[in-house]
Length: 481
Ligand code: HEM
View (cartoon, helix red, strand yellow):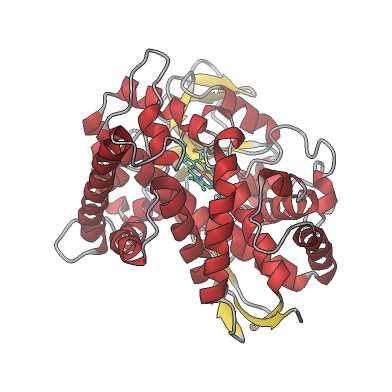
């Protein structure tokens, strides 16, 4: 499962599949090397503390699980048992630094086995070492230099999206629209697919994969899990078809080397001169589609939510974006220089990501026994780093629940204390891409509308990404021309 980023939705899947873990439950955790295990309790047999871990998110307070235990044990590392696995939760910047700096040394990424069933191909197309090497290339395709050329494309798609989905409507529901915006941009920027029929051909199986990941992992005909497995094969086959055609088009000069991420992937070799195979590229693109879908859509939905609630913040973003609008000729597309001017808007987006991080955290697995802060961590334990609790540390972020974009002025928060995109070698490769997508979206939405929430106290459900329970319906007030 090396190549794929899989949202924490899959952890829910694992919870459902606990019964399978029953059979294989490992021996009880024990201390090693003379150091004690971290404080904490492992909860009910097998189920451990999974229910408490998940249910605080369902109620909209995922950080509560962690803060309650940090206070109870007076420790920033505590033991628990989640999803049938002995685990330690690592809280705060110092812990994040330790885990992120020890990637592939003391720890490695860990995702549930069920995910491999949906995406088995990466393990078949390349060896583990090759897969790691290929993954190292991923950030190259998403560096600011590489992405600059796609800003105009994003701007164009955003304009079409707002014309068809938002204009001339009194009310819209933001989350589904944010998802469709994400998918259209990804199709265009990743593989130059923009014909509505072609996008729809990919969207249908893609949606089945997205919902199959959060379903009960029972692989029987008709189950969402089964449909996700089938759909991942369909999407992969379609992607391989697009890749083969692109190779021909590049050879015949009908496609350009810089038109999208796919051309870039096909024409970039690793340090030993090796190019990625078709299967690897298809895997990567599918992984990127999944990795960037709900995360960025959740982030944009919360931008809209906070701007509805905070008129002064809205005003600041509006003024900044209108300066950019005024500086452009009619029909001129956004450029890299315009994005660089969106400083306040990005501070606002960062504050949104601090208070509502799309990924609450992620798991690692201990590769060997080690000690941290005087506690023994046995080989095989799962280790969880948490964005949410890190972001609400009042020592780093005074009055942590206050929405204050000025926290990101200048150098911003100290290293490892603001981690919506993770850190270390596994830091989100889509970070810069997500930044562009979010800023282009903010540009379009504020230059067109003001809005208010239809449901003032709409509940937030974190399962595992934060999403307003009704998808965030808003009433639109277009600016007068
Ligand atoms: C606001 C939007 C996003 C957030 C908050 C986010 C967050 C994250 C985080 C926290 C991780 C690291 C997980 C870990 O430590 O194991 C990650 C990994 C990843 N993200 Fe994102 N992400 C976002 C958007 C995107 C986008 C747009 C893409 C694709 C273009 C993407 C692709 C990936 C991939 C492929 C990985 C896995 C990297 C690996 O396994 O080494 N993400 N993301």
